[in-house]
Length: 69
Image: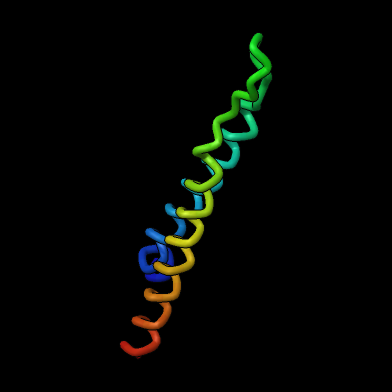
């Protein structure tokens, strides 16, 4: 149970990142009547931000757990 509690925040950040990626794929993109591409572009940087946060939190948690013994 300690491992789940220790890395829960990193896991949640990762899930949020993949949810953004799935939302981007599910919404899709299209070209409107004026010939302009419409797509939910904001989900791509959010995906990468959440993945970076996930890796960072995982690394910090891992280092803290190794120092604690």
